[in-house]
Picture 1 (cartoon, rainbow, N blue to C red):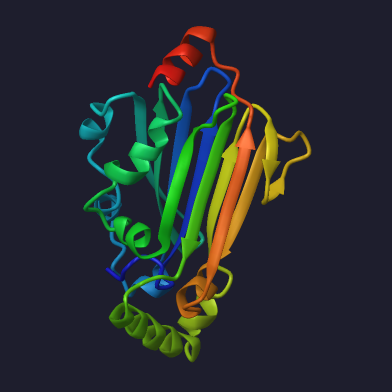
Picture 2 (cartoon, helix red, strand yellow; picture 1 turned 45 degrees about the vertical axis):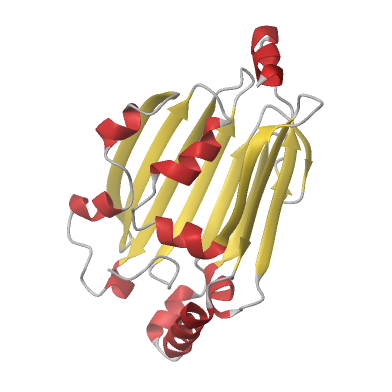
Length: 224
């Protein structure tokens, strides 16, 4: 199976921060049959992306974990939907729960920072910084692969593929992405083709938001 972010897939992250301080994360990986050269076979394809469900459910703070796979329009999708008791644990989930899986490659090569926590005034803060910062050898391999793709139908298919991030909150205070009319959702889209071939490419996502957690949870958060 080709490595993530070489044109074979789309990545969609969707994060929820609820007013009570709990959180949820949904990750959807789209594998394109025309780019996978017949390597998408059945539901087991998704096994290489997400930690085993029984192990995920045992992680601290995880209230539920749902996995599913489905196919639409020549694209095979792998999805994980995880709910947590504390939205701050989404950071740990990003850092640890997918470690050793195929999706880990995109984080190591392109995700420079992921922050989701409280700030001093009690509001919430989100930051995700993405850049092309692979090692020299990796850059050379990626550049050669991208140039090859650009001259084929795969290159044209890769154009228009995105790494999409969506954050839902009780209320946004400030954000540098596309904000919904009701001011509760912000989204960002990173063109995978640009991220792959441009060694200087960087994309910074930031948002601050309201979190109306119960008073006893606020005291606990300030103590830790």
